[in-house]
Length: 105
Image (tube, rainbow, N blue to C red):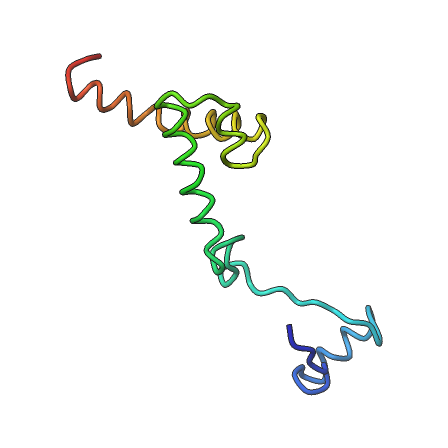
């Protein structure tokens, strides 16, 4: 984050108005909401965690225990369970729809 002097970037009237509220202190002005990247979007962390969580769910569905997944992914049992519950509920409509289309439901 670069520091900018208000005198150099703000119109004089706006600078005067801001000085009524804050003087000689640092002020952070956030980007507009539509220009802000969500957490992990720029670094790729969001995608990496999503893939990891999907892998955890797949392994659990294929018979891995919570304890095995804890050791493998270095996460608490509670974290593993939250991932499984979240992905199970997200997968449920797709699983149901597939069963309906296959004539099993």
